[in-house]
Image (cartoon, rainbow, N blue to C red):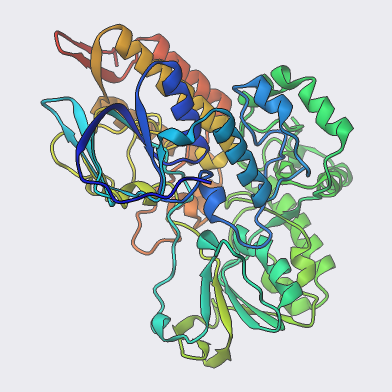
Length: 550
């Protein structure tokens, strides 16, 4: 456990790098910086490491990437030593893994826990960042690395009467660490995204009654989670170098078995057999059943209707089944969920479903909430309402760039980056898995390692050439933003009002934020930029300025 943190005088410190966040990105970044001989400090709002896996402790919280792939690959010693207990690891085990890595690499001594970064401003004369925290720290750093995570800024709806409710309220992204006992309680759950799909079956096993308020149903595939076997684990560990290398070039960074056939070019009987096998196998690899599901609406319709048929087969009440069967977006264009007994849970006599499209939630009341013309009484309400994804954790910090412009102001019309790594006007500010990179469309561990390695190599390049500032050109940034959007619109993704587009946050611009071109293609692009002397970046030193070719 981290040591207790005490308030300290706001005495400036000087380090080479400030890292914000001690999730998997921040931990690996600190490790790499030490290897470069650079001094670094990490500020982390939580009382421990783990990032999203520290906060998201809701019942049923589980990764949708297999355990053998959702882990660091940079150290063969670490990946050989750690043993997973399940094919899809749950939150407690992933958090134990994060602590195992942090302890093994002795990282916690450079992490200041329970400390929020409030301000970061760039001094163009000194080429340094001034970083301030809520603990009174004032740190001067040459570089600042934002490892704040894509899903860390929880969104709690601002319903009228929220403070009037006399019962308990919970957000799945800020779950009490001591857990919650719902035994004998009447529970309302608002939202049916990933955290709701994982938690509702667990809550329903305890609660007297669960009422789920759904705006948009989501597609979910059974995970088929099971205990890890020695044979399965050994098959991975014996071939880790080859398997990791192959995964890094896959579209999602997940090693799976993609089918190179098109759905509409496959006879119906054969197509259904493929879907049946993928359903039986479980997991998000269902979307790799055919090579055109994300670009061809007709092909996508065949996959979507197959899953809707499975929902109708599982849910005995036909009214509930139709409410749970998504029709408003192509399958896979919102993050596809994986579950254990989600749809079957609606067959329980203590679980009901309200469609808030027909009966919107009007307000919370002292006894519960009012939706449509009906009042509902609850002892507890769970908000499974997601996050201000990809940008929220960055724009909630007062980050001021070279000309005093804040990041929030620059991104008012949507995030703009070059490669999802940096943004023009904010020199020496790096983002790990920022908007404009594959990030949430990928195995985050693969994308995190790729970004950290690229940033580390970049800092080594600058140091060896006595350069002390790097910033993308506006032209390079504009070209990349245009490319990201062009690629997105060759797919079906923009057809969904998803959090990929910022659609879950009222007033947030509708911009497709992650890069859909694929982890492998993106890696090659980043490597090409570096190989060309950091093409599209301005590199500055005390004696000279080098502008990479456009």
